Image 1 (cartoon, rainbow, N blue to C red):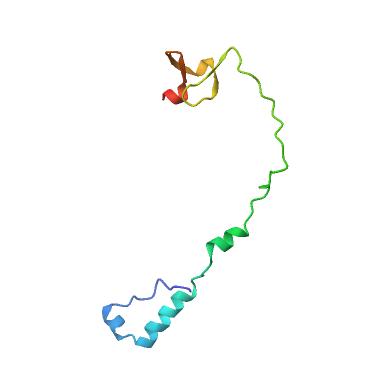
Image 2: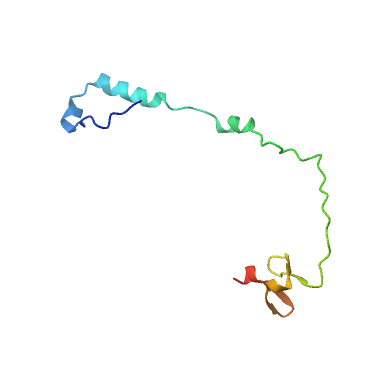
Length: 99
């Protein structure tokens, strides 16, 4: 519905003079734009492209930890020695976890 923003606005006296039929017609017009849709039903038909990976196998070459790397005791990721923030009682912590 188009709205004319340049048209003069109604004041309280004009609103009191509106008939009941006009008010009921306005109320029914506002509710006609509402769509009643079941979210569960809509989600069942939605499928992400490539979501079925059941037949896929990962082919990743895993390397053992190198001499210049360490495993962070906080996030358990393998980092290069240059990312070592501190070592306390044999526990090594990376700079990301120390921040």
